[in-house]
Image (tube, rainbow, N blue to C red; front, side):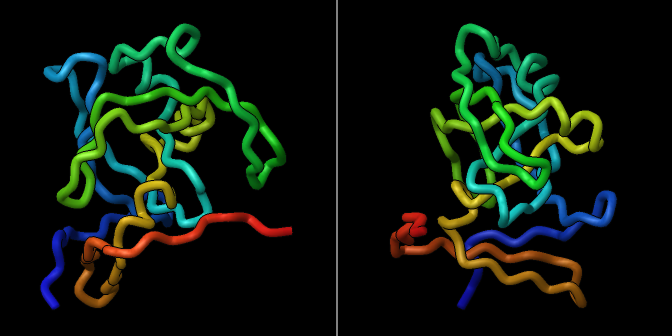
Length: 145
């Protein structure tokens, strides 16, 4: 089976990073960024500084929601970004979180399950690449006690 999208694996601080393009409030305002592959994140996120650089107003357009993290429950701003280009697909008007701690971790953000669940993924460490295959089935993300 031929993958829908294939790209080289890059490592940053011991983490797998994948390139994507994220758009600001205007279609001409975008950045090519590297996001850490994070299967433990239920929602993708970018740094607060990057969101502001792209023209998003966290106080006006963002809502705050609590998320469970490795460091405990923390509130994060949620914004709707105009467009994310990732693994050969475009995600328009996609909700992501903004995390001020990403700047301290020297990462642009994370790509989480909200996007990753759209793919079957093969990681080839010997060949140093990752392949994405578009999925055709929905996954039930219901959390049970």
